[in-house]
Length: 113
Image 1 (spheres, rainbow, N blue to C red):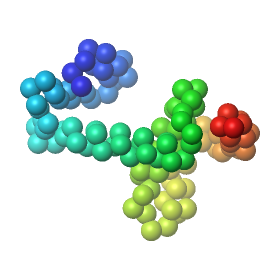
Image 2 (cartoon, rainbow, N blue to C red):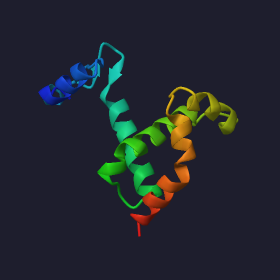
Image 3 (cartoon, rainbow, N blue to C red):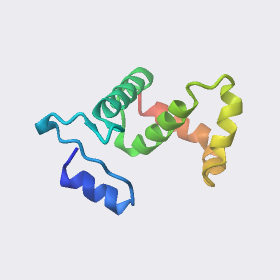
Image 4 (cartoon, one colour):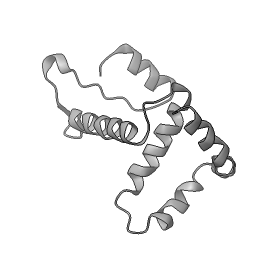
């Protein structure tokens, strides 16, 4: 999206941002950036959230997105556990979150009923 909001968000977080302008039917930019990739990712995320949970809570949105990201990275793996282990050490806070997973899961499930 070419919205100034997205450009500002990307700048604040030092992210690369490539805007595709739908108004002029721009679907591909530089042969690499495809709007269909964004639409496909959005569709998979939405189906996963709707199929796994009963909607989302903005309070847990970052956790949903983190979970989806890891799931997407591992989807072609032959041995999920073996592929998952290196992902857990990418973030120093992973072990602390793992130790607290039962509490967080119970809290998440309690909001679904």
